[in-house]
Image 1: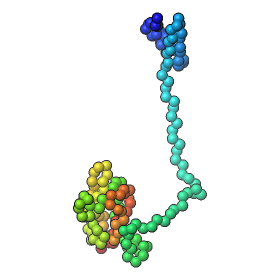
Image 2: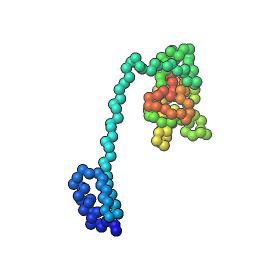
Image 3: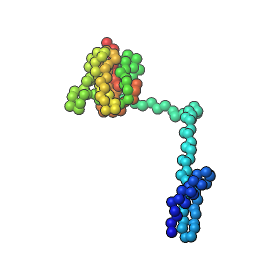
Image 4: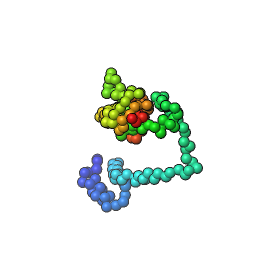
Length: 160
């Protein structure tokens, strides 16, 4: 014979006023187990970020210039005489509007302030990026269809 529903409800009411999490009752070959749902254990907050001391800092590594970089006479002189067009957002850099289209600008082209120089795809939206300067493109730093970060140099332009 099984426990009566009234008996089960009485046991539940009785246990709700206690700190008991589980009870098992055996009577005349019958067994009733009542288990109270346990609240999830508290989750520890992540440890705060702590900067590593200087003695453990990773040393800076000089990287070679990109393959498309063409210095005029020396790298230092080129950087001093050029202005960079930087990425205004994070996304994917594209040189042309589509794979079949010609690139917006090529090495050696003259660009005007406000002229579209590339597209950055961000969250499925194609954003036309305009030149911030006028001059001759002396370097295309980014490769087509590669990721670009905010503020990363994409082109070097020799101002006119």
